[in-house]
Image 1 (cartoon, rainbow, N blue to C red):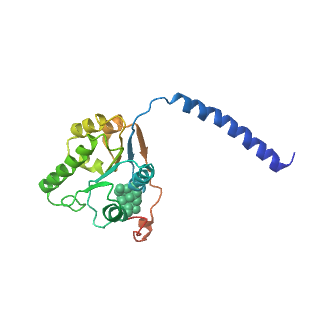
Image 2 (cartoon, rainbow, N blue to C red):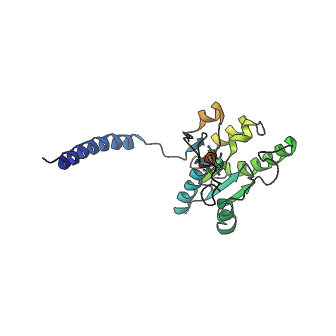
Image 3 (cartoon, helix red, strand yellow):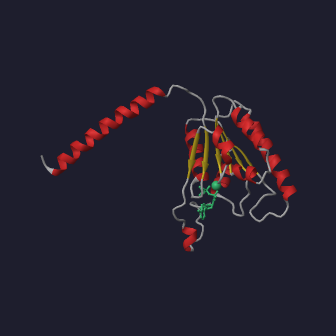
Length: 203
Ligand code: ATP
Ligand code: MG
């Protein structure tokens, strides 16, 4: 047996073993319902992952809602696309108020509550298959929104509806009620090396 054919055989055996394990897991997963996903951590990729799920859902003709809890200084590609080219997606962005250099806490809270009211209407509507709550965690971290109220809305949403929450932190109570919690770890970021934020990549 040559070295290559030995490697190929080893790979085949490993794959077969893995298939047995994966098939058994698929067999075991019998609960069919919407999932609650939290994407957190300090690395890049939380919001863009959420928008990846938006694409997936749209591919199946599902009904999608996107709520952004932070108005960036910078317009983003996803915002432009949602507003101008995807009228079928319900989109709401916290227009005024909270930014990183905010000075006016009470105006922020008003804006956060108005944005939350829209989010809550989606979380009550069984017509929506997927609801993205982008940067929601900061509203909890700053106590702009009541955590119990947010968790209640997430846990009592329609059974078939999935929800994706993004943002650093998130708190243990939120993590507890989410089905999938993934943390994006920061290994390095171009920005730290002095590379400017890039259109289509960073915003
Ligand atoms: P993205 O929208 O690219 O998926 P994100 O949602 O994980 O990023 P946010 O904290 O919401 O991260 O920040 C969004 C912006 O900040 C993006 O332009 C992103 O490239 C940048 N960013 C994210 N993580 C880091 C980091 N660790 N250092 C510097 N900039 C970052
Ligand atoms: Mg983000």
